[in-house]
Image 1 (spheres, helix red, strand yellow):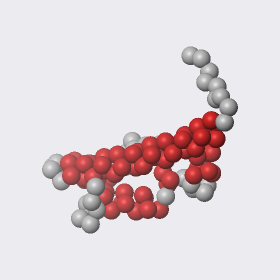
Image 2: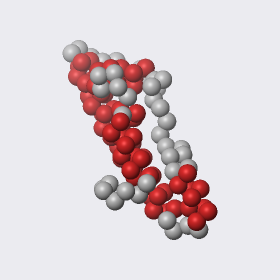
Image 3: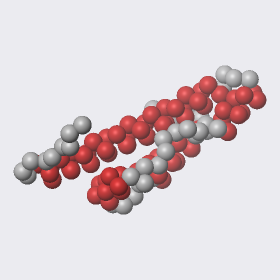
Length: 108
């Protein structure tokens, strides 16, 4: 695989586009995580009580991992998110807890 080399003034534009893409992908990951938790909750309602309870206890298992160890993600957080990890934000965490409890106010 050949190394990509930026030509001329496109570097700033390429970096900005990279951050835009990363932000879009993070929002997709958050939405998909929410859908997985929502579907797990719904499934748990149709299982025998013991198995449904086990699924609800493990409802967040195997969701997206952290990306903070990747230098590109670090730069994205610094530039685009004022140093905060969007995968670990309060709003997303609160939404995930509401979904995991089956709160009816949550719409996906």
